Every structure is written in structure tokens, then in C-alpha cells.
Image 1 (tube, rainbow, N blue to C red):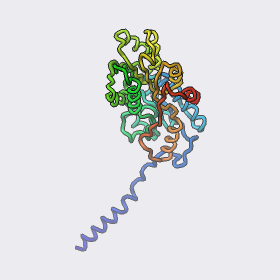
Image 2 (tube, rainbow, N blue to C red):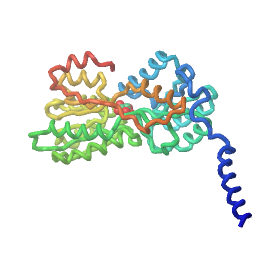
Image 3 (tube, helix red, strand yellow):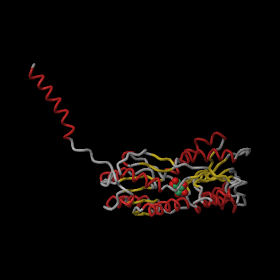
Image 4 (tube, rainbow, N blue to C red):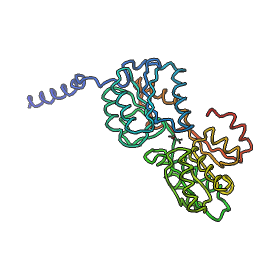
Length: 330
Ligand code: GZL
């Protein structure tokens, strides 16, 4: 009996000592934690490309804010080519100077491997603008818009624009099909369009561009002119559709209602001209939030996995539209 009691006590003592002998869990964050400052950050930024006004404003936000905060920014233009963007990601993993990687993903899938390699290399990863389908433990946080909500807002606004019209046929100009922005805007629009009987009778990618937006709309107009609204998933494609409607002898904004997403300078100009009816805002000025999140992660803080942007809706019938336009940053 005595030996049994001795054994029990011995096991209890060992169980108490063991944890203290475990190797300490690796410290979260960078070597400078918990006193990292912006000057300690070297950020490798993988931008999608330069496809339009939204992207230009997003890039400017990262370059200007880096200068203001005194951090070093290494900018990589993926030229809207997924293979180039993955290559750039690997380049930043190999770069001993880079301790933070920021990704604006061209597509939602295909990131697990490079994210795991970045984690193993001790690099902080922040996803900006476009969300991705990957394990949340592989990145610090995602800073970007709720694209599905933008789609829902677009359907609600299109219902108002088509009120009183007999037909409810809407044509959809889609961004690059693998992107979260295109997928989620389309899904959100379809969630709410039924409320007023809208039917999406034509839908095709125009890859975020004015030229392709015009080409696709021209081809559709050759088939039929039975369309009451156009839902363009970004402003550039909406501007292309406007050009095509005019060349077909139709009055955009009147004969056919036009709604686009982003709220860039081009959209405000088109609304003031009466060609565009509504633009749903998508905020590109994300760099301050992204760099702040990177610094917190560098100092070992755990962040929420998504910080949604706050955004509005702008309409051509707003009596204060010129004042609002004059106050815009992009
Ligand atoms: C949205 C952004 C989209 C814009 C397009 O956050 O990813 O990409 O809506 C841009 O204008 O090409």
C-alpha cells in the first residue's frame, strides 16, 4: 500500500514539473515584438495590376501611406496574371528583408502552399481587398469590402430604378470570374433581385475594363434591345456599356438604367452627365488599416479574421452630387 501511494505522489510531482520543462511556445510576431514600430516593417505588396480607377486609388493609398508612416514598401505589379502573382509571392518569401507580405489576390483559390511557406518563414501575411479561400490560421487578417453586400445593395437600387417599368430585364457585366469581387457581387445581386421581379437575361465577363464592357454590350445589342437595366460590377465596365448604348442610338440613364460598383471619379462624372444612375461604393483607401493590422500582428497581437470596409451608395438624382463629387479623394 505504501509503495502505491509513493508512486501516485511521484506521478503527480512529475506531472507538475513537466510543463515547465517544455520548450517555450514560439513567440508570436516578429523578433522586434512587442516593441515593433512602422520603421521595422518591410512590406512586400502583391498588387493585382492596374486595371482601372479603383486599382489606381488602392495602389496610391499603399505608396502614400508607407511614406507617411516611414515603413519600407516593395511593390509588385502582378499585371493581372495569376502565375506572376504567385511567383511574386515566392519572391517575397525568399527575400530576407521582407517581414510582412500583403496580398490583393487575383483569384480566391491556390494560396495554401505559399501561405504555409510564408508562415514557416516567420512572415506576417495580411490579405487586402480581395478575400481568399484558405485556412484562417495562415494569415493575420483580411481587410476588405463585403462584396456580397455590395451586390445586395446593387439589386435593391436596381429595383428602385426599374420601378414602374413593365420589363425587368437586366444585363450583368462581370469582373474576372475567379475573383472574390466578381463571385460575391453576383451572388449578392441574385439574393435580392427577386424582390422586384428582376431577371438577369444576359451575363458575361468583361474583365473590369471599359473596352470589354463596350464590346460585350455591343454584341448583346445586336441580338436584342429588350433590356431595362445594366448591372456593371465595376465603373469601367459600366462606362463601356454607356458608350455602346449611345452608339446604338439609345439614351443611357433614361432608356436603359445603369448601375455600377466602385464610386470612382469616372462614375461621378458619368452621373453628373446623366449617363449613369447609381454607383455603389467600394473603398480602395485600405492601406492605413492594413499597415495598422500588420504592426499589431508583428507585435504578437491576435486580430479579427475580417475587418469589413464601411461604404455608401451614390445616385445621379442627389441634389448635392456636385458637392459630393468635389469632396472625393479618387
Ligand atoms: C474591389 C476590387 C475590384 C474593383 C474593380 O475591391 O477588387 O477590382 O471593383 C477592380 O474595379 O478591378
